[in-house]
Length: 81
Image 1 (cartoon, rainbow, N blue to C red):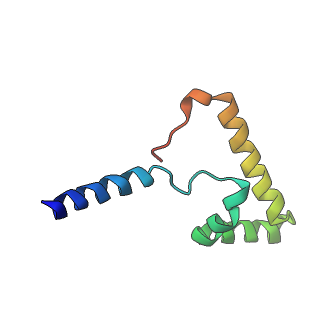
Image 2 (image 1 turned 30 degrees about the vertical axis):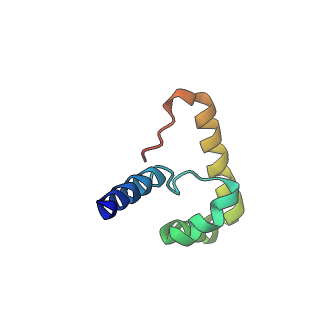
Image 3 (image 1 turned 90 degrees about the vertical axis):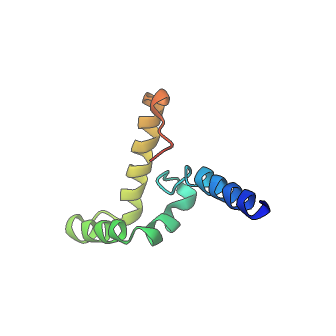
């Protein structure tokens, strides 16, 4: 019975922590996001070569646009991404 309770508790907690995925981009976790999403890194690198825009400028634009979108639509925050 204790093993079953422990298993159910651990499944419940892991489900709760999966709600907070790495989809929320902030300045503090952009490096870990680039490590996790290799395609994003490759795309920004290719864009840098093609257009000459540095990676940090591209990422700042992405972060700023996400912040502005959340400010415009605060009721539409989706945590189950």
